[in-house]
Structure formats: structure tokens, C-alpha cells
Image 1 (cartoon, rainbow, N blue to C red):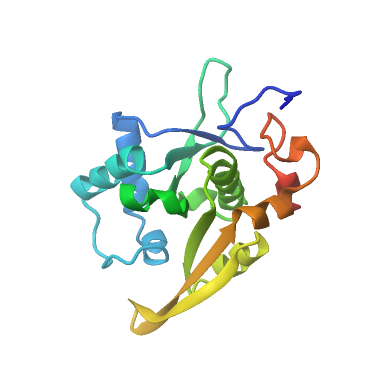
Image 2: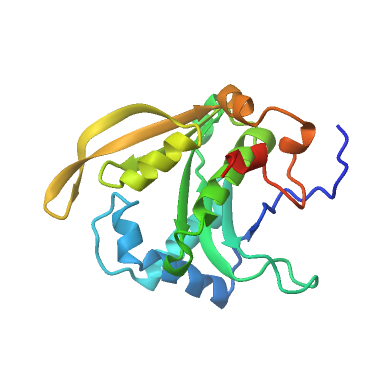
Length: 216
């Protein structure tokens, strides 16, 4: 394998991905994400209630230690001396129990801070997570879920190449009504078909993610 540009597996076109650190700053950032009721209502099965710092810290620990990939999504650093810039989100590839690991499956979860939504950062982070999952972690299948009322997420996942694999009907009770849990999946060979082309399209470098950002 020949890499003509600096290989940086933790950087995409506009974003940097770093570890979750045991610092007051990361604790505060994760808490700000977890207490966003609007985001949690569209992504979590948990009963919507005020988020405690204790619960948020447990989630932070899980992301840092229990996932195949758990990363803080950041803007690029302002100077070369910094690893990453301002944190704007969290992305995870969840791990299965050890006795399920041979199936090489995972699922993505992603949260982007309110003020950075609608700018394509979530899309970019998902594309990067697929690259990492298939190219680095050796996964065979990656799953992502959307609640049926979140039509924007449904359209996005379909556009990125995920296939609707089924619906768990009326699994989600939210705001006085029942909603489906829509299950999407993408297989390694399907992803490779999307990003096939030059080697540059598969390997992350300083300038691009993969597959010309899926023509985004």
C-alpha cells in the first residue's frame, strides 16, 4: 500500500476525531450533549427526563472504554500545536459482548451540538465512521437506527447507502403517540462499491474522507 499524502486516520475533510479524555472540559461537553432534550428525544429509547451529571459521566465512561470507537468530533485546531479544536459532537461504534465479536457487527450513534446542526457535520462524521469501521476495525456490517418521525434521518441514511432492513413497529412511545424504530444496515462490500475508485478514495488523507464525500 502506498500513501502519497500524510496518513491521518482521525481527520476528515472538515473535522478531527479525538479520544474522550478524563478532564473537566470533556465532562462538561458530554453533559451539554446529554442534557439536550431535543436531541435525546430523537435518538434515545430512554424515558425523557432531566439529565444528571452522574448519568452523563457514566455515558462518558462507556463511550471512552466500552465502544469499538468512541470519539469527540471536533473542528480543526487553530494552531499546529493543538491536537483538535472546538468539540462539536460525539460519535460511537458500539461494541458487542466478547462472545458476539466474531460476527463483526456494530452500530453507529452520533450526537452533534445544537449550534452545529444543519451544516453537514453529522453526515461527514457518519461517512468517516463507516470508513473507520470497515477499513480499520475490520467490521462486516454496520447498523444505524432512526425513529420513523425523524424523516430527515431516514432520508440521510438511505442517501449514504444504508438499506432499510426492517421496522420494529410502534416500538417508540413519544409525545402522545407510537412510532416505528427503523433499522438500517450496510455491508462491507456495499460500502466498498460506493467508495470504489482510486486508492485516494479509500485512504483518508489531509484533504478528503472517502468516495468524494459521497458527492455531498
